[in-house]
Length: 214
Image (cartoon, rainbow, N blue to C red; front, side):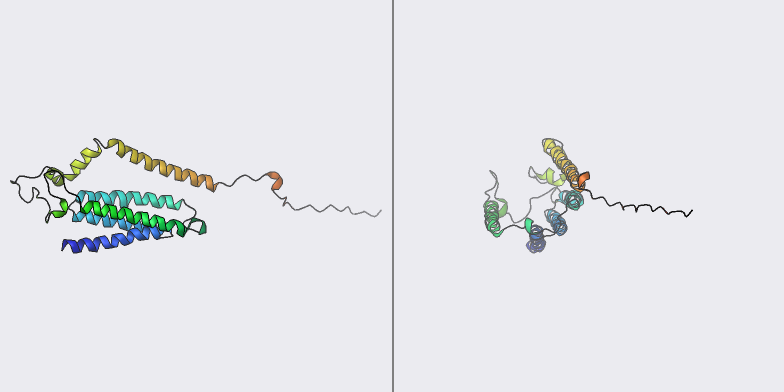
């Protein structure tokens, strides 16, 4: 049952990912990306990682996607034209490289031997036990992480990963400021020299003097 549910969720996720890459309209691509982020959140729920699912929706769907849409709105060429289309001579090698990387990832994950003293994860038929299943049983070392994921992730982000966390926020801020600066610079028209401006003022007709009879 879980495998059928996984395929039912992962299938639309793959479709959304392909539509994100292949869509010519940037707005449509961003919306497909939002749908893909939501599918990833559903997969986190299946893995019983509710905190990561909530962060996926709040951070990626609610923040990163809005940031992307904000950047797209500052882009002039939203639909795409002939100058932005990729040639077929580039698409074929890029597709071959992407399929090769996918094959390497699939084979590496499927043939993962497992940590010393533990069986491979692919050989397990059920998830590891948690405190909710057997409070008195001997739990694996990762059980506290599973039972209190929010605290563990917070400690990791504010501990050894704090530099990468702050750099990611700084990078997003620089991207927004750069997009605004580029849009303002492109929106200002260059000054026109005075010699090139045609004189559109109407010419005044000469005044006629009427002779007064004496």
